[in-house]
Image 1 (tube, rainbow, N blue to C red):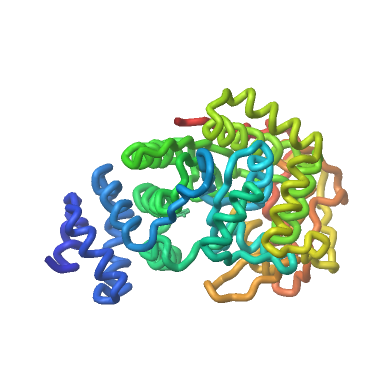
Image 2: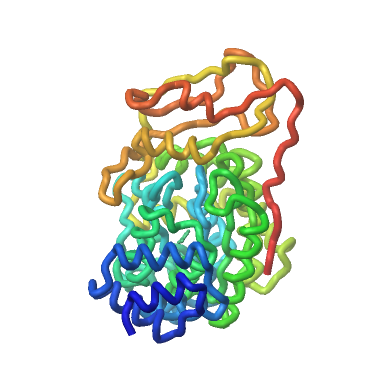
Length: 424
Ligand code: URA
């Protein structure tokens, strides 16, 4: 067996066997297979796909490429959540304490942002002192005592995904359903939760651009979950516009706190209650409606907000010290009209250019910078009315680059549906 034969097989649309996939992953990890050979195989997979069996086999090999987290010392059914990535997606910051306030244990490993999408760990690090690296004992102890903990993905969990994802990101091989499914599910299974809720983003700011491909991805991840005896629920949500109004690390922490305080934008609240009530219902074996009522009540009574404070403090964060940039620039609309389309991918790229994200893996982030989008699709605004605020300096960005992200038209526009489908 050698890598050239394996690449050729995939090029000829043949199915790869378990031993062949294992040979590839083992030898890529130990450096015998080079990046250029792996890139070639990845591109053949992007173009020719993988069968369900190949995808499950690849997932299994990736899971076993590193350590498995044992959460058996955590009481009750542990539920995890994942998002396929979007712009302004601060749901984990809200869901972890909210769901924990309903008595569900959340032991969550999250990632950093890369490209145009943000990452939960960078957002949490905008809170001064917040520790994203806890020892395994500290992690388990905090989940048992506080109800939730969010830490950074350690080196040893699915190292194969770490290496492959970084390569996919720079070789145009990210947008492949079997590769995304095995990447997400290997990390979720290795992280040890009993049930998993996945927010599959759909639209111009997401990896899945249409409902059809998002549905295929969801069905594949549910099948992989079944193979490992894990309940997986996928919620398809709209990413044709940013989620909420705030984009950028410290800014998103602020908006998350607004929601936990009973305020915040309608779309963010709707997605939180949808994902959160499924998580609580899976863990407590109660109906989704019942779970939703508990969450609404916990927001009203500030139980969820207090849980957030407890969670941040337990990980060393100072909630009165969130990095938010002082330099603010107001961008106005050049005409009257209704917003028809927001180029969400480009807005994410602009936030990244401001310093909210990285171009290269090791770049330093500016935690305080970002954008606050005042108006969303379907809303009307007058000429010279504020369209958005830029937090930071626009030295390397043309203002027209920002305004061009918004298509404004004279006829009334429908507000897009946020929850597109729930698949279980
Ligand atoms: N999120 C992941 O973890 N992996 C992918 O491939 C895509 C989104």
